[in-house]
Image 1 (tube, rainbow, N blue to C red):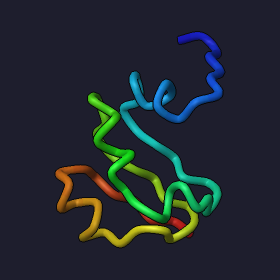
Image 2 (image 1 turned 180 degrees about the horizontal axis):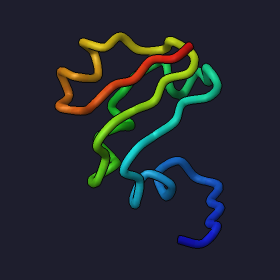
Image 3 (image 1 turned 60 degrees about the vertical axis):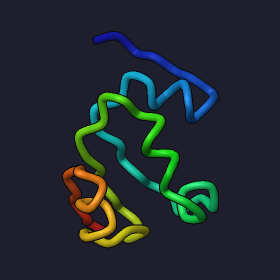
Image 4 (image 1 turned 120 degrees about the horizontal axis):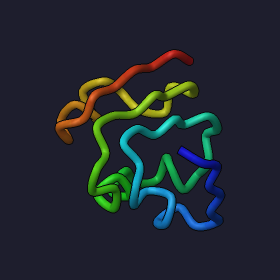
Length: 67
């Protein structure tokens, strides 16, 4: 696995298995349908308490909140 940097969320989500949310950006909090753009997504690590466990698990994803 090499280092890979992208500037668009949609591009980053294409290969993501897990997402670590480290900042409460408005684009993450308004709607969570951005997660549907991640075809390989298995779960989220939420360091900001942006989402509830039920909210993410209802999408069929694993959730870890550590914020």
